[in-house]
Image (cartoon, rainbow over all chains, first blue to last red; front, side, top):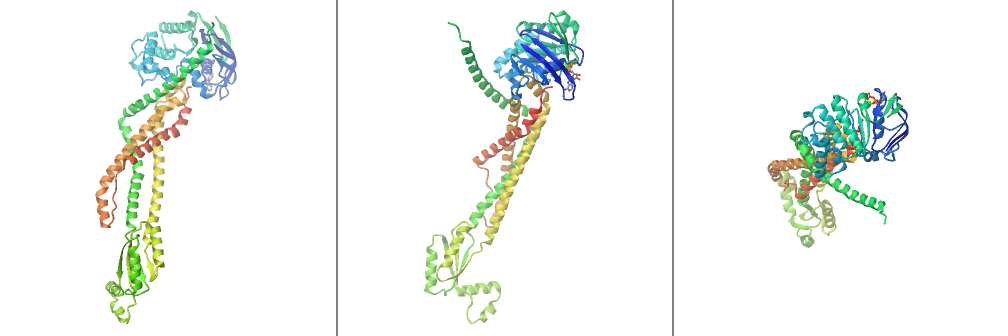
Length: 220
Length: 322
Ligand SMILES: Nc1ncnc2c1ncn2[C@@H]1O[C@H](COP(=O)(O)OP(=O)(O)OP(=O)(O)O)[C@@H](O)[C@H]1O
Ligand SMILES: [Mg+2]
């Protein structure tokens, strides 16, 4: 479960990116976060995994209030949250397999288990057997899917995605959204920020509309 | 019977902790190999860095070794000077004979040679060329003298011996030229300090070199560090590879220093020996012993690890995902 309770975020330059946002997402739920550019979607996601701190209000992740979380406790929180962020793409000097393995290495998993998990995660995004390829050998959509495999390989209970279909064609976008829906059915709590309203319409999921840092509505 | 979920939970935590410790050990083992392999993937810059560190470490080391050998030579040389014991009695008196016997019986004295008044006069006349003037005296003005070669080592012991001889009956004056020894020892103390200062300065240099190398590596891996932290890597976790890199840089640099020192000693050995022979000294440059070599490697590795702690930690903490 994910709870934002009257959360505001003011950046150091004085800009208030979020104003009094309250939101609750149940375990295993898939929620879309929409709104025009600058509405505060990315900011909201960053508050959940501690990249940014809220200026007011409470952010509660899996029963843990992370508003006052000590910096040394952040890693523990982040190991439970898979992320697909656009400014954190793949490492191009690492193979596809090494990229996907990163969260497992951080968790300290034995190499044999890592290989097995990476294979399974790549299979889930239809990239079986591509472990030894280099990211630059993949198409944009394939790279995006490797990023998703990396985000879920360690089976985190939470998944945050910021524009995961940014530069993909509609068919591939739909496929990727289908993947996220599958994860939520497995009990993963998924929050996706996106501009793609057409795509959101065809998905049967809740939509939270943001505008100028405020929640406009919850659409079913 | 109902199951006890808390007991199960506690058990799971225990397993988790032992698994965490295993994972920690595994990470260290992997990094030990991986960081070395990563450094070896750029052999040109690696060897350059090692060479720079090696040179920086070898300079104070060579000076220190030279000084150590000089100190050994000094200890041997301090028995060389002779002590002149001037007599207040004639050389053919019974007192003179007794004094001679006393000194010959001392365990601290190697040899005693009697120089009679006449011998002293002849020697002085031959050396000074004032023989005619001296012969003008009706009596020989020069006293008899005992040329004493002491067995004692250092300056303090020699001083005790001199004081003892000064008190003996029949002794007028004991002359022992200890000034050159004192000067040498003062010089050695200065050089000693110089070696320590140089050692500290060059160690600082090594730390700066390694720290700088590591910071460049961090910059080139910035996005990897950011993504690692995004997925929950702790500061310690991302720091670990840099500690091992520092370790390898320091250790490799120390190996190069060892090589440079041994080669330099081999290169210098022959001329140093020749020079020492010319000065009738037994000064000779030795090689590094096994103990000293191990110490050198330990210091090198230690400097590398210190460098990664001092210069990397804050830098790594500042890198955060955005
Ligand atoms: N680090 C920052 N410092 C100051 N202002 C910021 C910072 N990051 C974002 N903002 C501002 O906060 C507002 C919300 O930004 P945010 O990135 O959350 O929007 P968004 O909804 O994700 O937009 P987009 O759809 O374009 O990605 C914007 O006006 C932006 O300029
Ligand atoms: Mg955004």
